[in-house]
Each structure stands twice: as C-alpha cells, then as structure tokens.
Length: 169
Length: 293
Image (cartoon, rainbow over all chains, first blue to last red; front, side):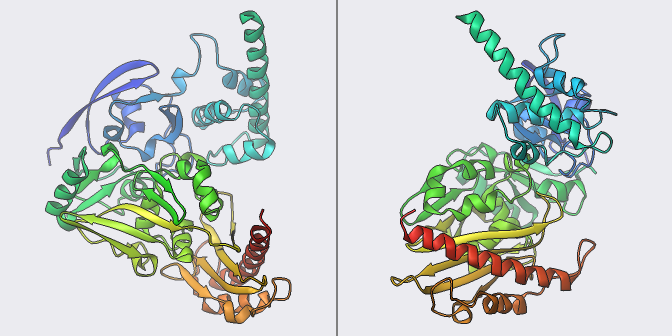
C-alpha cells in the first residue's frame, strides 16, 4: 500500500523544520529519523519508560504516543535544545554534578521532564519531585541521585535568578 | 512497535468530522489525546483503517463548571481538568481521581472524554462517572444524544458509542449538600494501573445521619461496578454506621480477575479493605462539607 505523505512543519528547538511523513510516523521517529535529532531516545514505545519525553509547546509529552502529523505547526523542544549554546542548562549541570546518570539512555527524558517540572514549580518538595519523575524509568543509576539532581537544579536556578536579578537592578 | 498504516483526516470543524465518521462507519476511529489508542496501535492490538484526528477542531476543549456540575469537552486534557479550581469546587472528586490517572506527562496529553470512551474497567474516570451518575454526549451527523453512565459502559473497552459517533463532552454532576467523596487505590507503583480501587460517595441527611452511600470499584468486573451500600451501613451517624458491613457488601459483588500482578482473591480482599477506607473517608468529607468547610 502506497502511504500518503503529509507535509508538516515543526518548530524544533526554535528552528522551523519541514518533513514529509506518513500519518503513522511517531513524533519520536520523526525527530530521530526525519530530522536527525537522535538525542530523543526510544525505549518501550508504549508510554511506560519516559525516555522519549519531549516538550510540546513547553509541556512534557511522550513523543512515542504522539503522531507527528497531529502536532504540525507546533513547537517541540528536545534534549538538544536545553543547553544555551555550549553552556549546559541548570538541570543538565545538576545531573552531571550529582551523578544523576550512568549509561545515559533515560537521561534525555528525565532532563525534559525535570526542565518542565521546575519551570512550573521552582521549589518542589521531595514528594513533588518523586511524583514528577514517577513516569520515567532508570535502570542503572537508581533514583536517589536523580532526585538529588532535581533538588540541586532547583538550587542552581534559584541562585542564577538571584544573580540575574541583582544584575538587572 | 510501529502502527500499521492508516488513512488520516484532521478536520477543522465538528460537522466535517461527523461527516467523515459517518462515511467511515466501523472503520473510523477518533484520535484525541491518543494515550490509550496509540499504545494499542504501536503494539498492533488495534489497527483502524481511518483515524479522524479531532485535535484541530475548535471549541472542544472547554471545561464548564456550573451549579449543576462540570461539563468537560472532548479535547480537555486530564491536566487541564486537574488544575481547574472551578471544577474542583463544584465536584472535588474529579481532582482526587485525576491525580491517580497514569503519570503527569501522560495527563498532559490524555483527555478525560477519551478515558471514558476507552472504557477500561481498570481505569479511574469511568468509575467516577458511574459513581456520580454522570453522562456522555455523543454527536453524529444530524443529531446528538446524552447517554447515562449506567448505559454507557457495556463491557471491557466497550461503550455505547456507535460507529459514526463522536463523544463531544462528558458531564459530571456537582457535589450535593452534605455529601463527601473519596478515592482509594492500591497500585504496585504510583501511576500504574491499580490492583484494586474504590471511589465512594456518602450523603448525610439534615441530622447528619447517612442518607445515601455507594461505592464504585475499578478492576472488579467488565464495567465499573457500582454498589449501593446505604442499607448495609445503616441510617446512622458516620461514627456509628456499619462500614465493615458495607465493605463486605462491596467485596461480595466484586469479580476481579487473576493476572501476573495479583490473584483474584487478593484483589477481592483489597477491594473490601479499600471500600471501607473510601467510605469512611467519604463520610468524614461529608461531615466537613456539612460543617461548612
């Protein structure tokens, strides 16, 4: 069966990107195969592991449970878009500092999830952090360091806000 | 783990969607949040010939909280209803139940109406709709009908939705005066499907004695199981009511199944324990509500 191709445009990490995809193309596969952004990882492909989590208009979603055609015209942020040039984001720095990753497979999903979590809730309690990352699985580091990294990222962001605020005044 | 090919329509108006669904008949399937449908498609447990993606239709994402209840549009995501203070004020059980639905990231995309139409007897929202006596509004080309929860859920993953119909909204009745609710469940990990779960509603009369008590169980049969325990617990003040007898009445009606996670006996036991807990919590909630808090 010849599948119909759909022209779509996504703004990925601030850059408009076009792709021709069949309707069944998952957003995760569109990002990886059509757009060459392999930072988004694909684990279970049924919404359990959280590795493929990206930000859709700023909200974390499972890219393996989203068709690329459905989000035509919208903004997607992947792990490649979190850093500011060569400078890692506060969440990325905190994960590195706290040993919040080991093999790194689950890390892109955690980073996107946590980036959104801290944007919505800059000073989460331990319970809120646990709830926030409960949809992401890690098979090697264990969650202690990941949870520490989330709290550390919150600290770094608070420090930087303080610095920026001071500079602005 | 990739979906089979399908034809795809993304209509921008409701009428256009209903036309496409009418033409497609039983080959058509509606895509809203896709958080239940796409896993099934990825695993090829479902392979619809035509997907009608309703995400571009305007006006379907409303959440209207009024004195009678909360009407939730087909594109209202779980997370939006969970955050709605107006909806929580009218029917507090919604927010309590939504926090038990999957994980926050899934709730960003999944829709409330989609969860109802998916009609998974192990899911929370069908039990909530059944407990509260809500309804689902189904549109088709040339008309709409409102189906009460009791008639809407017809079997595991089966609802009264006919080919050519689109569920455009669901209605959750408001909390009546002197009424409390609770939702208790046990799952292996937070966000997993519950091994057992019970939503409860208790209404008190003017003397603060139990006037009405019922429980809705998840995973206890092919459709949400609603058990009226008003007679079993007795028309007494909550502290004197026989909640253990009420819980026994719930447990006796539960017909869970054995799977890799738990035996049917264990699930039945849990259902009884959770029923007593949820009914007691609901009664306390009713007392607080009656006291004006």
